[in-house]
Amino acid sequence: MKIMQPEAVHIAPHKKGTCERCKGAGYLRMNVPFGHPLFGKPIRCQCKEAERIARRRQQLSSLSDLDALSDKRLESYNFRIPGTQDAFRAACAFARHPQGWIVLIGSSGNGKTHLAAAIANYCLEQDRVVFFTTAADLLDHLRSTFAPTSTVHYDQRFMQMREAELLVLDDLVMESCTSWAREKLYQLFNSRYTARLPTVVTMNQRGQESLEEGIRSRLSDQSLVKTVVFERVGDYRLSEHPEA
Image (tube, rainbow, N blue to C red; front, top):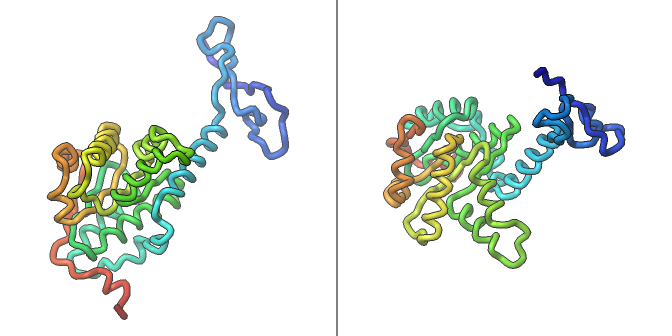
């Protein structure tokens, strides 16, 4: 049975500036004969899907901590510092083609956050749905949904984090996490691991040692994860602010 192109369901008048495909209705119907499974069923128009993605992007943007890191770009990263070249090359490759996971491990001040934020900023400019946060802030965002004044349900917030097109989790450490926090972080990692969703993680040696076993196992999967260790790198922040 041949299915023709969708036609608009005219449930709203066509207004200037509205979608030319659905004429502002928001839904389409398939031009199929009676008895077909899709006969009479409304199908969401592409314009509605675009609106949904835009809302999702805005929601995650309001949660992300990128405002203070908007100047962190790949082109502003000082890859000439000895020991940073491998991380810089890996970050550039990942930003251009976000596939799998990338884990950056190094001491405080090695430039991990700069690269993680640069990846997030680059992908945002490509209209990707990006969520950038620290592990501590991510857990705070989840806890905030239990407040009486919260307008967002926990399941909705957690789904936004799980299904973000790109998750960038800076400064992962589980040393002082409660059992609830450990469970939520595991659920987040496991969900993204199962779906193979692009993810960036940064941590130092202390954070690596504090990992829950299930998360450690997933971060060790070389078929999905590329791990880059900063070796013998001085304080990167001094290169960004020579007067410091």
